[in-house]
Length: 359
Image (cartoon, rainbow, N blue to C red):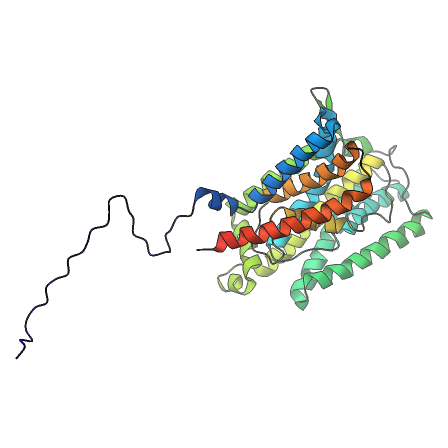
């Protein structure tokens, strides 16, 4: 009969080999290269470097300092708007009215100042209120109706496009506003929104400085503030975000208002650069802003992206736009280049996102 009280001999544990480390699969540290590639801005940075080197070789005028200053200027006019658009996309939405909203802002400031013979700063301030109101309307409609941002902002796009043309023709009897360069306050406003300064004999537009400043501010907001956490949370899953106390309504509306602020700033730059505004402009620019954000690593599904990525995305746009001219190529190829860049960026971003979420 077997003795049931017999103790089993304890198993002898084999010690791990020297230098080895046991893990359960959840604490495996990925290689540094993969962790870097998982950053949303790394892919577009490498793409921007490649485009820059390509045009340095193919277009010798790019090597000149004044040409690079012009490229940075073109990039800044896109990049200033691409930043709030990117934040909105990280928050899970996008704005199709941002392009024509720029022109709405410029038209408001120009016509109000000229027709009422006011200091141009009055027009600038009223234009800011109008731009913020457009963003407020888009955000309010979105959260109140639950409609997709595509439908809400498409409606706003059509409203603003028609209003820009109709009101301008009604007030000025033309499709453009009148020249305001001789009005009170013009020089002071131009100094802020459209001036230039010299570095080493090269004229640099003030928008380049504003662009970099806004990029640094947006990066700090995203990475170092509670509001930045809210943006990522509502973009990832708004219901879960609401359940843990994130003010989803405030965050969504404020993001649309940030786009309105960007539209105001770029609109003021255009007005004080050219002294007048064409009412039919702006159509199609919203796609450029969205594409710069997408190329910069922001996902259309929300919850992922950075503020630095769109800086490189806008630089790629400016580089291609001016590089084609400096290379002496047919500028009709510009949109073809952009399409290739956009598709390539979407594929790279898809791979990067899968890399970032892979255990």
